Length: 108
Image (cartoon, rainbow, N blue to C red; front, side, top):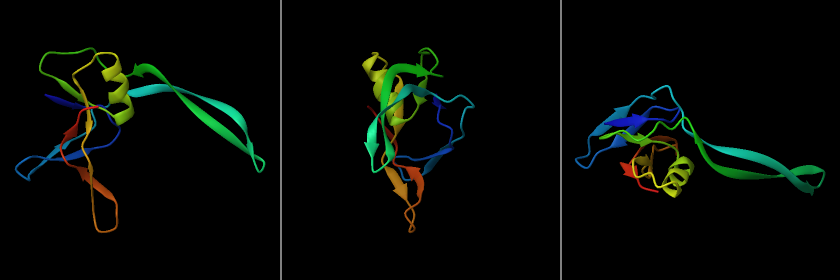
């Protein structure tokens, strides 16, 4: 079973060329972060985002279930030893460059 833990509907191209559409589950998995102002450039604050290792909204592993999250969250989950967390595959874009889907799934 695939569970979409992103805030967006996912349209995933399958190996046979057909599409699997996954609506958002209502839960969003996010990596914790903090913001630090580290200086200024021409009067503008210069920020540094520091990513944490905690993932909010990620359920515990469940047999036969894969969770689809952002690539950042998938990388953090992998660092924690999770093998059930994936990210959308490479973006598929329309003629105007808008993302309309993903080519399968990616492992972090």
